[in-house]
Image (cartoon, rainbow, N blue to C red; front, side, top):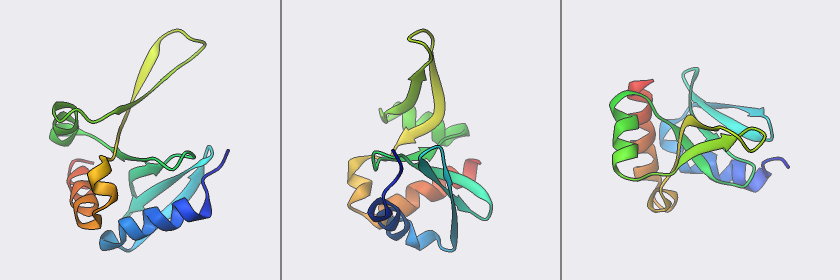
Length: 107
């Protein structure tokens, strides 16, 4: 399954305040970059995940954001350095851009 053109348009509009952005399709999703730094992934299901590092990762964990995890062969669960963008930010591009700026400041 690949990311839809509608979802790509939505993500680019959501983060328009960070322009110029570049993108790269990868493994069915879309990576979003600012000045060559990946800060978010648009998953094929339409969900948006911000990359976390440093104190921003701590903030996302403390606020209870959902962390991207996966299991291989039903065994060990691996946590990726991405957290799902809160629903409130999906309806507020200013909030989404502020969160992305916080992510970028730590990357």
